[in-house]
Length: 294
Image (cartoon, rainbow, N blue to C red; front, side):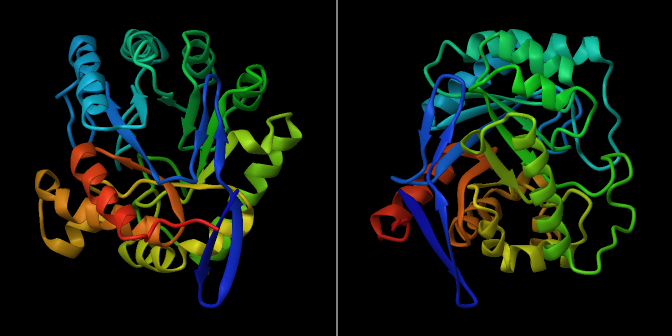
């Protein structure tokens, strides 16, 4: 089954399943909600709230109870200006949480760019690697290819978190982003990673100005021409603060609105902090027949 989306009289059909290590995720019946579990002391939105392994494990349970379809566990903050932690620290942050999450009966994702963390997480039972650097680090493609059914999300980012918001520049943000994702998709498939294992993320807020983000948002459906489902993360992002004037802890309504708009423009997975509110909004969306597939 394929999803048909239209934007400026363009129509694209995209496969509506995502193959992961233990699960084939059905994207046809409804958009899926990926709940964020930050096992870090310095996340931009909830830094320190779930840094201890016990707190992060409890957050997994809470998000699952709120209706999360997928749990995404990260041990490195990628907020603007951030620096990566030592490898040993990232492993210490994520592995205890992953070992708990994989017992909960839903797909589990690890948010990392390090091949060592990818391999350890997949060995611990994780289903998906969510990489903001799109498997560009040395050894990352091989780490995924070595797990023949693991899912992967390839995201676009201009620059690195430490510097990415220092005057990002594009001639045509949509075209340049599409070229990057197409190249990374080809590199992944050439490395033996089957296309059905891959979803794509435009990377809102990662090396993009307010206007870049809004231009990309309005034309997001054009990325469906790449032939893979879209995973989108707008939750509590700085652009929403610029649009609303709200601080990060008051952006839940804007985040839910952005998630719905992302789905309207073709996204089939939304990555969010506020799971319960997003799940409820999508239930209404689906009841209204707005999530129909062709």
